[in-house]
Image (cartoon, rainbow, N blue to C red; front, side, top):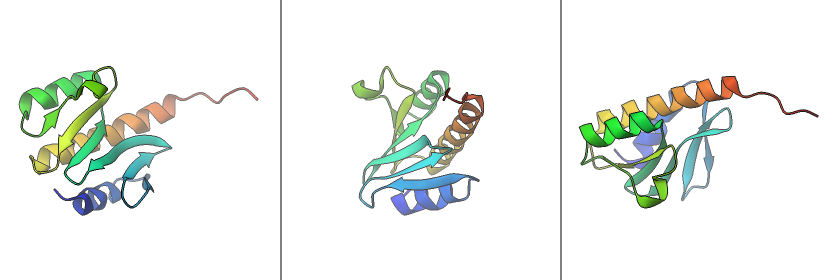
Length: 109
């Protein structure tokens, strides 16, 4: 996938908005991050820990866990990898963040 293809795919998901900068775009739903372009061929995708382990196990040439991501609900996706797997991971990230936004409680005034 290219960064433009990532942007086009995420634009099809209801409520997913692009923010960030031109050089480092990021996509959010309900102000919760779904993904961010880290380099021209690398994407950070938000995901649950069990999903991350599945992605890395099933698609080791596409997904990885850099040391900086180990303690966080994030996975590294290399855009030269399996585009179908990347799109599935992006959709799962979007669904996760929509659910999490629905659980958020308003802060007291």
